[in-house]
Length: 91
Image 1 (cartoon, rainbow, N blue to C red):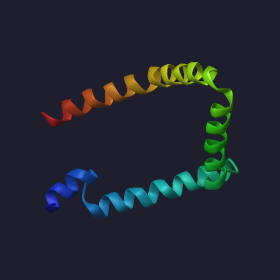
Image 2 (tube, rainbow, N blue to C red; image 1 turned 45 degrees about the vertical axis):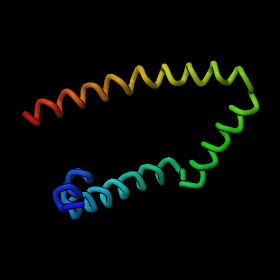
Image 3 (tube, rainbow, N blue to C red; image 1 turned 180 degrees about the horizontal axis):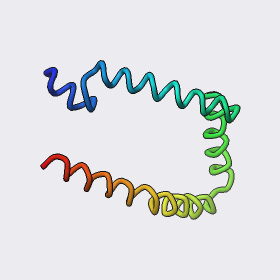
């Protein structure tokens, strides 16, 4: 992969992306620490969610669909708006 391809894949130069990731990791670490959460707690929350989902059986399929629709009502418009704004910048 050429340097240009790597930069395009990463969304910028490797040094800039590394700096952004370090900064965002620091900010997220502060927020999680303020909320008294650590990564293992988050992993346990996800595992517990799927265990409850499994134990609920077929009722869970309906709930999962409801979660999907509720999430899509937020995610899809934001994604669409970001794509439209990025198209405007590319021209």
